[in-house]
Length: 83
Image 1 (cartoon, one colour):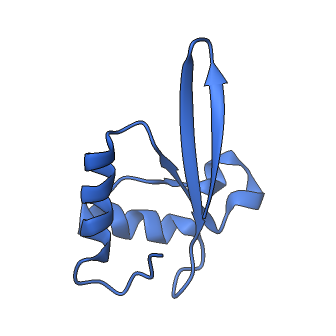
Image 2: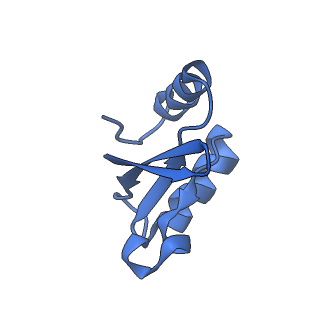
Image 3: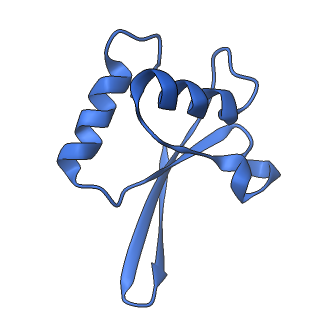
């Protein structure tokens, strides 16, 4: 997993990314699965170009508590590998 910070005006927006693996041809399938089954919205990396096809992007603009709750939903009763 890697992260990237991008500044716009006086705001800073941070992103983290992860590679999609295991049974997904690209990240779009994983993002759809997370949205519909875990109620977690992440962006497929392909919206940022072909090099992002196997990656997801996670906006870190939510509170730490909300991000932790989303992570717990992903981990619970699933076959997702989260480190």
